[in-house]
Image (cartoon, rainbow, N blue to C red; front, side):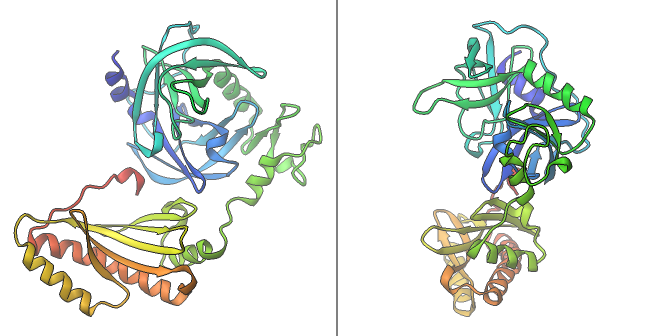
Length: 363
């Protein structure tokens, strides 16, 4: 199959994974989502989305620091063309197709070859591939010419071009078999003794078998805990009945919908908090009338303002972190939600503005 056909055939098995610390990729094998341990970043809960999976929370039930693998519970889904792990030996020169979400660019596929089928790094063998992989590809599959998974995109060498490394399929197969045989949920593999440990058997974050400190156990126990202005913003969102975990894009950004409006909040390093929504694109006609309407509304607004960015009409709530209070923030964001959902329809219906396109996978 061609790279295009392979992507089209198996695209529903490719998962985007988000945490407060970044984003990555994964793929469905059976009832599990396979990804890298460094993608889930020691968390017990992450966000997943796919073509057939609405953005939602999912539990990380296996964290393997030895292989840099993690398993996430896959929601019920029927796949016409499920991915399978290859059972054939990998040879130098074999086709390698890396699929994932580099830099948040959803469902990207790059084609190359297996430069070295058994590149030893530490105690593990990796596939060295020259298909371009970038941040966000981690955890995604490497496929062969038949669309079978031959590896998991795991790491690249910094300051090089097309030097990527993938964990071969046979490590993944072994990890799945061992996890299933263990018969427990919420399992950590000890980096030192390499045994599988049920999380509830861990005391004070130490491995009960070899006694080594398990940093991943501590991370899973503590979870993500925002502080300062970030915690205040999330307290405000929670009070407005917005699911903060679903909305959270990173430690300083959030996205959610209100009716037909798509709203983003960004907390910048300079202390400015910008909550805004792209309502529409400028019409080809009635521009002057729409400008007059926006200026008139700006005169009557409190907390909010209209603005033009490139060809888009934006409604915004801006505030400095030092001025943000729970009461003002709640009023401002609540008004933004209502106004965005109200005025996008007015501008489109009354002035012929154009409804913008949004990538629903990230909302």
